[in-house]
Length: 142
Length: 386
Figure 1 (cartoon, each protein chain N blue to C red):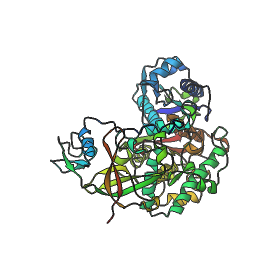
Figure 2 (cartoon, each protein chain N blue to C red; figure 1 turned 90 degrees about the vertical axis):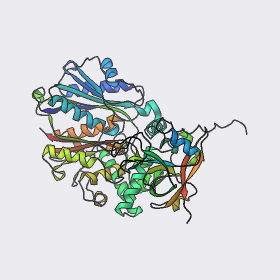
Figure 3 (cartoon, chains in turn yellow, cyan; figure 1 turned 45 degrees about the vertical axis):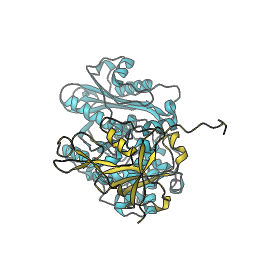
Figure 4 (cartoon, rainbow over the protein chains, first blue to last red; figure 1 turned 180 degrees about the horizontal axis):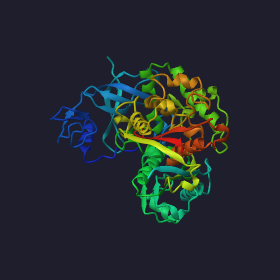
């Protein structure tokens, strides 16, 4: 290969904070996590040091089974930045995981015509160029 | 002291090569002050928004310095598409509290010539969550497409019918823009063109998405006695309200019911009016789905009835709710916070009877709404002929 075409610019890596370091460390190990309040049981995402429902300190981190349902989806035909241009068309979904938290993720290994609300999915982890892994989803094969 | 809108102005819109962001601010400000019959030195409050092309941490101070004024009160507000309405709400509150007598609210950006369309799309995608949205390649149209798909699902609308409802919004507003000599997109648009345009983020096609523009607008809010010599043209601020429910699409409490319900309810309660009392509406239309969803969430149409009503001409100049009579963000222009301010300027012109070929006959009450983020921040205004 000669350098006749520009390489795709790097995709933006998650800008990790002190609140989310443990979440991304778990993703790198292939584990999806969420938080549950020990005082009131409220489930929340993304992680933070207090419960947004009852304001108690120190919600605990729990491991998700990684199974969820598509709440909504879109097929992206126009990339937001050049970094995603080679990927179009790609499916973005809002996924409600069974434990009660919602994540955005790309729906992989799914023909666009098969994407639908209420589709059952499971998490998969995609390695990122700069290290770590991004949680995405694929259809759950019953 | 009772606040009124004493003056409004807007600049040319579209691609304005060779004009800086601050020059657009100054042009809009000077014209709005002239419209209010005020001098720059009469301004004791300045409210600005933000700029993508020429960003600054303290945009209102930058404007004051550039324009050559030293107001006693000054602030910049950033609430995305809700900003323009929020500036007028804040200006009204400052006048009501006796802190200011003449507040200049001014917004402008040169994001088309300054950033280019692709640069503006990329810059706007930066509002996605830096960990849980941006790494996934979420564009702003994609975020609204997620809302659109869920809306269609919960309303039980067939995809073809839904596409026709959205297209009817784009076509209706293009028709309004055609009657406005300054609109950026005035070429006729047919249903067939809208329905066959290239897909951006399914189910949203090209004409479901707003324009990218250069341009500016300004509104002067004055104490009623300060505006007395122009009282024949002053417009009353009858009500206002806000609601802020989330920022990011993955954190939306609902994809089909939004804070505009509460912000509008506050404004209507303050004004002592109901949606059926409104003669003309100027409602934020970053995407066709934005308007469709807000029309029902606010209460202008019962659940599931907005789309069919729009297909029947409800938003036409002689319809049950003439809406976005300048063409809106879809066809008039969208230059950041000024995009929302064009809605306010148009409402004032309608109430003054100055809307020429797009005048809604006998308009005495106007509803204006802005929303920022992904239907995140909402601000509603109700204006009336003084």
